[in-house]
Amino acid sequence: MRTPQPNEAVKANVKQTRVLVIEDNEDHWALMNRAMQQCLSEVTPILATTTIEALEIVQKYSIQEWELPKLILLDLYLPTREDGCEFLQQIKSLPSPCSQIPVVVLSASSDPADISESYQYGGSSYIVKPTDFSGWITYFNELRIYWWETVTLPPINLSI
Amino acid sequence: MRTPQPNEAVKANVKQTRVLVIEDNEDHWALMNRAMQQCLSEVTPILATTTIEALEIVQKYSIQEWELPKLILLDLYLPTREDGCEFLQQIKSLPSPCSQIPVVVLSASSDPADISESYQYGGSSYIVKPTDFSGWITYFNELRIYWWETVTLPPINLSI
Image (tube, each protein chain N blue to C red):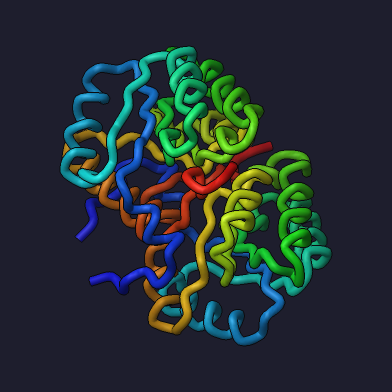
């Protein structure tokens, strides 16, 4: 269905990698985790339920860069929008390569202010959470095709 | 094939919008323009061949925000990598909403330094340019599905 990716950098994306999911809603996490197992079976999801825990995880893994997550999925309301925005600012001000990890913001909200601020503070893209499991499957299939088969993610494994 | 998007913010993405393409290679632009006509017929591509021209276009359209491009596709080598990186820094330091426009970096290069710096300076994602027209079709179909049908783009039409 899709043409094979021609270059080594793209191929490197599909190797076993971690995705950090920052989510404080147990039900949403359960749906996301199931959808990821189905659509992104080659990646290992790591859950953080607070932004403090998420930053600790990023800093722990940054000691050995190959362990760093390749992508971050951030729930914006943790529990308030300000928490999600503060996390974006914090991760983007960390030293490279932590600051390079793309952060996809997920939220049930479609409030224009939430969307604007997510992009303003460095979110790579903003996705309104789907309302049922089939919607999560659609979205995670799309995340896989975009981030692992189309885009070349930051070469964290290779950088100094 | 895809489930309908439930919310108005997502629906607003598919309206007639502009995409700013910054590309100094005539052959690449010809391929991209043809692929966009085929895959993204609802958007109007605007070409800038230099970063100076691109910034002038963004600033001209920012007078009436609804005219601003919803997405920027940036060739990194314009003609050097430093030109592309400088543009990323410049657009990200403009006032909102110009700074919120996602910038997808495109390049023939798969050099890890190019990829790292593109993310470092605020690129939303990095795509290695395909080598033939069918590759461009695949990629522009994917850009359409991701940025117009999955992601909610910055609400430029609505913000003050």
